[in-house]
Image 1 (cartoon, rainbow, N blue to C red):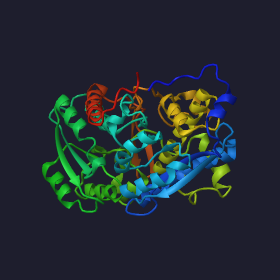
Image 2: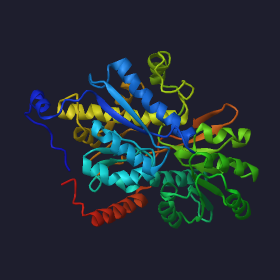
Image 3: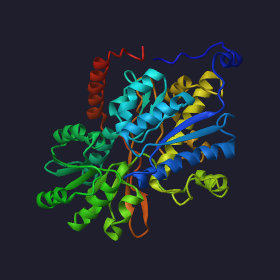
Image 4: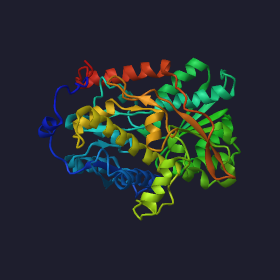
Length: 428
């Protein structure tokens, strides 16, 4: 589905051919209730606050005001699909469901409806292949990139050789938690480490047997693909058996303040992956304080601003907003349609210059999207918890993942999906 550039078409003619919308609508499939509410709430706050900032400071995007329509899912796949059906006809530009289960159910729906999915850091990894998944985007990184980032970090601290080492994966027993397994198996074969798999059933409060096995088998490293209370319990159990925290590495959904706070000082040194920066040392946060929090317009009480998950919601909103700008430039109109939004996502380029212009230089990696590559380069970083300072610190830059291993997996999985669903090439 190569983008056909508009040539010799006036803005007026384009506007006559497209419906006039009242605003730019961004649905928020939130979960402020249920077992994952403590994590879902700050993400939803950051997402909403960024669009409020754009309205209050900039008058919207390109002169068109934004509107966030929040629909509570409780992290339920069924409710997530219901929220999609209830909001898709209201001009929704792009969905960010914050759930791998919901994502899998929405992929065929958004493709048929001409709407887009943006699932940065979660969802179906092989959707990075835009030649198959025309309306799904998962930049700037996915779970298979994350598996490689974790292994690369272990390689770094071991001088590049981890042959004979052992790694245990403690994972949420769901589609989400199972995502990295195939990649880790391939990386184990490549680098010569052994891999053990320890599933944890939802919601994750019962982990005694898994950590007894870890105490007995003494793996060199533990990786975690967890969410919500599962993370808190795992970190507490790790401290109970005195597992070295610097050898315990979580995916980016296992690296928030919520996950480490309950363990107190025992969580010191715990590491997690990330695809965006931490803290509030960016000009955009001064603007959020001025135009949103101090103005009494924050989605929450302001206490979540700058936390990991608030920043993640803000980052997702920012990427969608930048894609709107790209779509507006491509099509020559400010009041874009969902189809135009898809073009903006597929032509998004994030640079130091563009990030500096919005007060977020260095907040995330630079990357570009294309028809063939909806996932970007898969860059990621490592953060570490300082229990004394009660803060996360970046201990690496945004580094590449092992695409020699990951790309063939993406190609094979997406090719199987295309064959099963009779999907022709989208990039011819």
